[in-house]
Image (cartoon, rainbow, N blue to C red; front, side):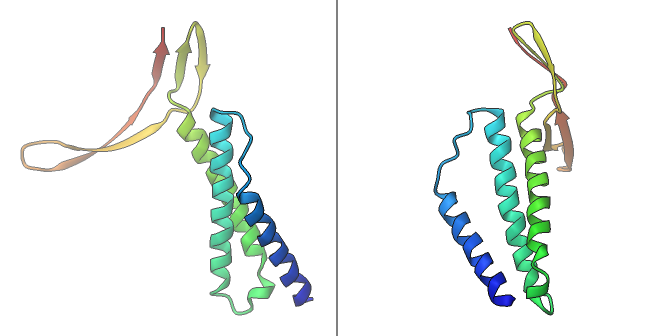
Amino acid sequence: MNNVKRKMMMGLAAALFTMWSVPCHAAEGVFKEVFQDALYGGLTGALVGAAVLAFTHKPGEHLDYMGYGAAGGVLVGAAVGIMSTARSLAEVDHGKVRFAIPTIIPDFQEANSKGQTAYVVNAQLLRGNF
């Protein structure tokens, strides 16, 4: 049973490494960025799940950690991709209004002459191209 699991994992790893070198043929723009972020998040999550296996008593019985890590990574990566591509809450582009999640931009600014630093969070609520 362990030999079959080991062969399946080696085959999956070989397939992932060969597919990694093939370029993604997604359209340029928002979808490509969200897809890439989700893909990288899934790969990172699977890697973290595999690293957690090193700390378990019987790693062969907990291979589902990699699947859970990959699933969580895809969700987080897609959320990051969506958040990074949305520029403002409402966008006016050549007469069309679009609504999206605004990009939240954290920033550190010097507040006064005493050298204290203020943590400021900015979000664009309205943007337009005319």
